[in-house]
Amino acid sequence: MGNKKENYICFKCIEIFQPIGKFYIGVIDHDKLIKISYKDIRRIEKRDVEKYLGIERPLSPPRVKELQKYVNFVDATFPTSVILAIQPENAEYIEEDSMMRIRDEENVAKIIDGQHRIAGLESFSAENNEKFQINVTIFIDMDLEDQAMVFSTINLSQTKVNRSLSYDLYEFARSRSPQKTCHNIAKLLNRKENSPFNNKIMILGKATGKPTETLTQATFVSRLINYISKEPNVDRDALKRGKPLKKIDEEESKGLIFRNTFIDEKDENIAKIIWSYFSAVSDRWPIAWNENIEGLILNRTTGFGALMRFLRPAYLFIKKRIGMNEMPAKNDFLEIFKKIDLKDEDFNSKRFIPGSGGESNLLKELKDMSKIG
Image (tube, rainbow, N blue to C red; front, top):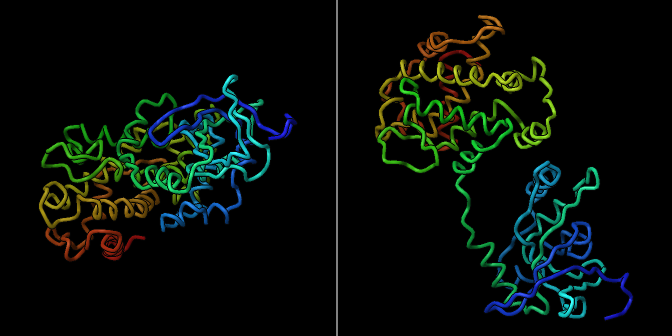
């Protein structure tokens, strides 16, 4: 390698020995990492590793877009290593100084794992000279077979985090967020004795053995959060930074029916409306909603999804009648449900097939029979 220091990126590294061989762990500034790694999308999408394994793992534009927002959140972090493979002519480990020296040129480091994170970091905008450093794991002169083994171990054997557990963790957040509000409402409605959701929600997404459990926490939260925020993570970041959320106008609030209520920090009102709405469901169809009967779908994901989608037109219909400053009560919703000519036994999996198709069919029947929406 040459002797011109300005041609190299130098940083501290530790040397690691494992059965696969020797590699190095260090920390590098995000902009330097972007420069030296393969950042041409076509090169990333057609990497030798994927060809070797006979699989395709292209860069996902939606995932990149999501990470481009995430890297600018106040609490953004990539705590796990980006894994790179570098040819020996482009890198040198100086053992006596525990220092790694990498040629400061484009495309000298092949990304084995971390392509989406690196693509997302291209949109990082430093405030107050903030740094975004990345811990990297570097393999030098790693043959293609070993690259493929590491790639497949990481990407083909990952265990996904339970979505319900992810929502449950928002309870420990200090600042407000749409996620935390929806999580708290789910827990409240699940534990209150007279609630229409009493012991009906699997709080961590896993059944505890109670015969009444028919919904996961993730299902409940994901449906409710759609009425509060279009971009929950963006709202969470703003609130964590102490920035106020801007209220929406009347037209936009026809879609995000609970957003202004959330901004006003009146989460209890959202909980009361959900309680009233599903209490009316419980009164109208007591067997289909309250009993866990095989073949009936009303209190399961398909039925709950349709009911949550029907909540918006029902809520707006009532608010137009009682006034925008009044809160709908159970009887208001019950009047609507009484117009719907469906019996408990009609909510069966043959008539409404579990999944998005059955959900949409049920929603259509609710709207058509009630003449709402």
